[in-house]
Image (cartoon, rainbow, N blue to C red):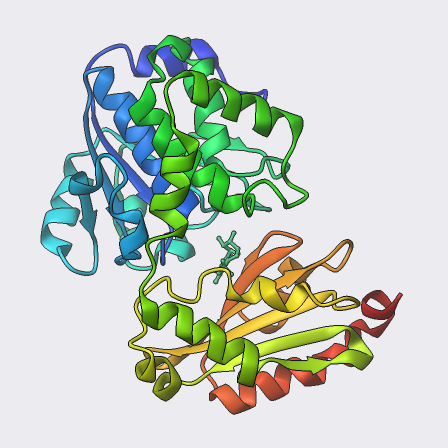
Length: 338
Ligand code: 5GP
Ligand code: MN
């Protein structure tokens, strides 16, 4: 974590009850919701008035997380969300590094006079917050929220409820502890969460074993019929049109994790998933080793993320977007094929 933080002024900030808004990125994932609600459950224990605002809705498999009823979805309940922003004395930015990641809600943060605090693990954090906790080596923002609570001297307040939230973020962002971002500190924190009462098997089942039959069949369809390999460049991708998604009654979050299957084939080092949604193509990129998909997403797909996991978007058709992906591969030939 950043060492330039004035810890005393931070502690002072939370020493009396405050109106606090926690925000997280568009299309919230397990870490976005887990870190936000983990922080929420901690701050209410400290006597603050806390609300969580997401730019848009998030998948059903994250709705069980404690505090879910305190989440306001900006693009559904805009007036309520704007009022919460206006009244806020402190605004947190969790699991995103730039206001562009929260679209229209970003304007409310720009306008606000509240103290702004960022906790995040993405590269190149923006400079708008008053306090920035940014550590790109951390597995997840949830891991950083744990450290944040400890920094404030409140490790003893971390209970089962906070623990379940943070565990959700850590287990999803680390791909169940298998991604290189998983450190010994990650396991140590998880050990503490289990000691605080988290039943990891129960949480795992709530997240990963509550999908619909349609989602499982969509995965089967992707693997059997849609996977395309470009072996010359050690790359592969899956592209899904909106008609295909509709055929399997696609719900937000259904394609979560699909991109990783492509990497499971020996010799494949770069994977992409393209999904046609609401007039745009959503892109997920994953890579192995020193192939920097954050750079690829920033350069070609209007996005960003981490070195081995990034995302972006395209306003072109699905066909043009996948063609563009195939056409950029020769630019990365050396790194892809080494
Ligand atoms: P996913 O492919 O799971 O949606 O995202 C992978 C990673 O890239 C996550 O850390 C996510 O926050 C980040 N990411 C996804 N889409 C975008 C985007 O459009 N812009 C930026 N800057 N990061 C993104
Ligand atoms: Mn994250």
